[in-house]
Image 1 (tube, rainbow, N blue to C red):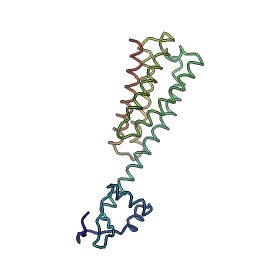
Image 2: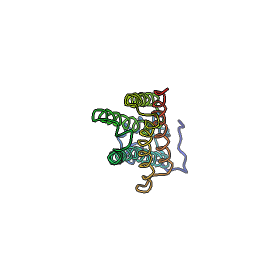
Image 3: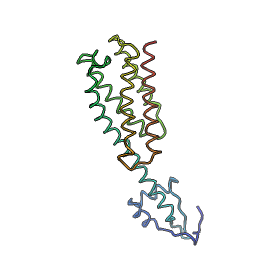
Length: 207
């Protein structure tokens, strides 16, 4: 690090910057050591943080918290909407064919899939292991459909119904919350990526 400060910038001490970020000075020191936030050293070896850098870092943390909240909000609403819609689809071939035990199996699989979807949309870097688990759920959906002699088209209609519900809830979020369009677009893309894996696995069981 440079051992001088630019006179044209405003600077904070470690304790001042930590207070601004509402964290312990030890936490800020660790972030600085890890390269997460830049700092300068005075000739006496004391850390100084640019007010601009501290504000940018604070803004980034707030955006991250909002993004994390977005996924949780979406998942909660999607679960409610899906339950309500399923109650109106009892006469569909892919629903009417199943007895109480089969419906319970589907309910458990649906909960697992929703959990995986929430994990996947919350991970900005992607996660191959989650996609593998989603594929396994798709294979299980396909196995259950084949055992009930459901045509592939009916099995895929059930899967697409689930996906459409999740996407529809995501589409409604910008109208009801102050989220950025880019964040909502990323959410829908992640939903599609995971559920496409499920649909392809269902089709695979019929080959």
